[in-house]
Length: 169
Ligand SMILES: CCCCCCCCCCCCCC(=O)SCCNC(=O)CCNC(=O)[C@H](O)C(C)(C)COP(=O)(O)OP(=O)(O)OC[C@H]1O[C@@H](n2cnc3c(N)ncnc32)[C@H](O)[C@@H]1OP(=O)(O)O
Image (cartoon, rainbow, N blue to C red; front, top):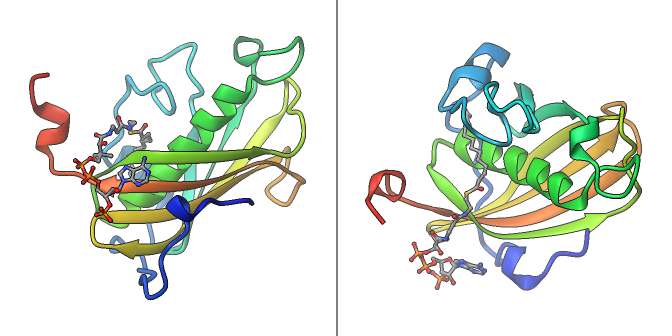
């Protein structure tokens, strides 16, 4: 992954273990999940419907199925949707640290086309925390958790207070 300085943790940034410890699939599915979310919401028929499956305290995992509604070029997943999937699993990793955080910067490398009908297996992990800044990486593998990497991302999430989500704009 080619990550810029903005998404690379500075020297000395600590790598936390997840405050929530081992998260069961049920906890992962229910904790803080909003059914209207385009990435993971069950009520969003045209959304990605990313399913979060496990966390071992270091990595969070999930997957989603690429349907016709996710196409860009005929028969292939749209790159923006793949970036959304990266954002979703990165956000899960950030929140799994016990922090409310939003995406500040998201960098994506597309390694191979993703055909409609594929399942993309997602994984994300934290590479460092400095103050409110949370540095993360993620990857999406084709059709198997150990399949070839189709998409990779590096991100900076920024911790925010709860009012970020509730204040009138
Ligand atoms: C258990 C698990 C359950 C999980 C469920 C939940 C899953 C959820 C999944 C959801 C998944 C979807 C998730 C989504 O889609 S989140 C939705 C998409 N993101 C947003 O809407 C965020 C919009 N932006 C903002 O609100 C503000 O700009 C933020 C809050 C990000 C920062 O504004 P704020 O005024 O608060 O802070 P600051 O400006 O002093 O910045 C602070 C520091 O950060 C650095 N910085 C900031 N931006 C950038 C940048 N672009 N590149 C490089 N650096 C950047 C900045 O230089 C500074 O560094 P330093 O000077 O201190 O060194």
